[in-house]
Image 1 (cartoon, chains in turn cyan, brown):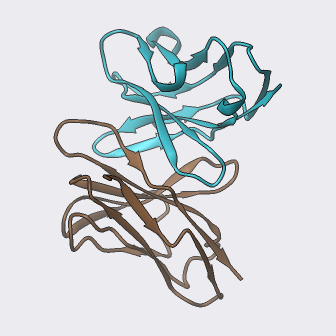
Image 2: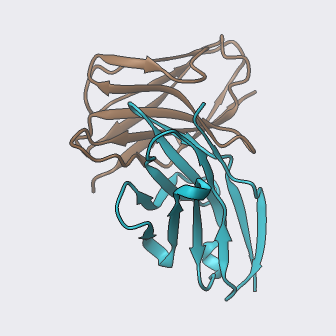
Length: 112
Length: 113
């Protein structure tokens, strides 16, 4: 069955440090992959997406993600974290014909 | 401004009562969705609709109902048959013109008291 796994429930980093959030997917064909961010009590905002082509995808707020088919991964990265990046991050994979399958999320805490 | 509007933001319901959550979009999107979010479980799909007057059950449809009489509106009714309705509910939509991106509203908190 198609699934998305985010192995890290909670990550804590210092402001200015680099960040990598892990995402693994299970899907037979080339997946459509997404990263969303959610601030407490708010909806989800799209950070970036991968459909095909260049495996390194740039998104908003200085985030990027790399699609690695051999590892079934789509990890999210940021070179220098800001305190405002503290939020919950969700990886998702589109399941045809018309659904999104979400991981359970990673909560990011940023220390000054 | 274009977007997805959910109302109310906060709603309290007594056990045994039905409640309807509103979702309106002015993005001219064809597809609309309802997700439920519980802590530690990510988002789970309740219902989705690809066109007007048609909708399909998602993974956790029991105790919920929807309608899609207009393209811009996709209300969700949480019925008394839903055993554990307290949750955060998110509405979303997607254009039908080739894009695969789903956009979300700001969510509605439902608490059963």
